Amino acid sequence: MTAAVTSSDNARPAGAPEDFDFNSYLAARKSEVEAALDAALGPERPESLREAMRYSLLAGGKRLRPILCLAACELAGGDPALAMPTAVALEMIHTMSLIHDDLPAMDNDDLRRGRPTNHKVYGEAVAILAGDALLTRAFEMVALRSPGVPAERLIKVVAELSLVAGAPGLVGGQVVDLESEGKDVDLETLEYIHLHKTGALLKACVITGALIAGADATRIASLGTYARGIGLAFQIVDDILDVTASSDVLGKTAGKDLIADKTTYPKLLGLEESRARARALVEEAKASLSLFKGDGGGLAKAAPLLALADYVIGRDR
Image (tube, rainbow, N blue to C red):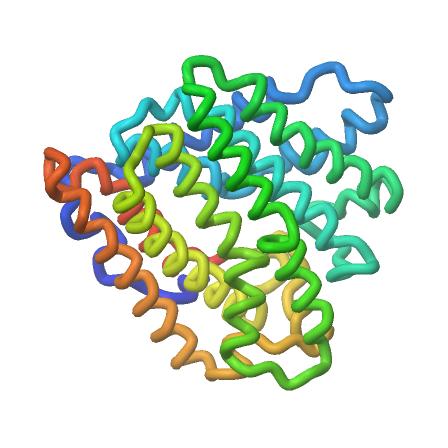
């Protein structure tokens, strides 16, 4: 399968050290995240709830969101190990959003990450409650399972997660998305949906990582610009893949946006202009990290975030 959008510097991002191996970095970080996710769910009762939570949380996936958090923490001069509980919390919130989005009352999908969605296995009621349990466990991860992080930084992280998980973020984006089905939507409304439904959580990933590191407001703003760019680019590629890739490749139902009569970037702009917009957004995102050149070592520490930006538009699923 050819990648949805190609990038000329996908092999090694500009400014990265020549010995930086992104694939090895991604594999190592993903392994660390998987282990932390597995350890995060204890002996919940009842067992049926624990099974439903684990079914979706440990279903695989790219783990880009927790990896973004760890990379941002490191770029801002922090210890990624201290950010791991927050990285786990972010993946829990993301998983909750997937469980709930797949419900019949929402996006109504039967397939996620290559296997039946949570409600198809455990029923709608347990799926809803499993999502709720993951959301609340996320705040526990930050507040009670983050040793070594100053309390004032954790309060800021909790505040950021509260905003992203509620009406100003995921919930608000989902509502506007549902209200827009079957309607002609302009680019401003489409970007509102995606900046909240998808982009808000991606932004929270890099912001919370930087907060744990104790980054100043200027650097947090720079990372926010980076996150906005990759968040929109990520969604544009998702929209492109929905019409160009198969369900087997995607691990979820292809063409469901067309079936639901949703406005997407390809529908609004066409495939080629959508690809061009994704590339431009990624270049803007990468440029926003130039602020970190003066922090010592040039952009060496930014290599993971630069490569992740390229990965967003180079992926095929």
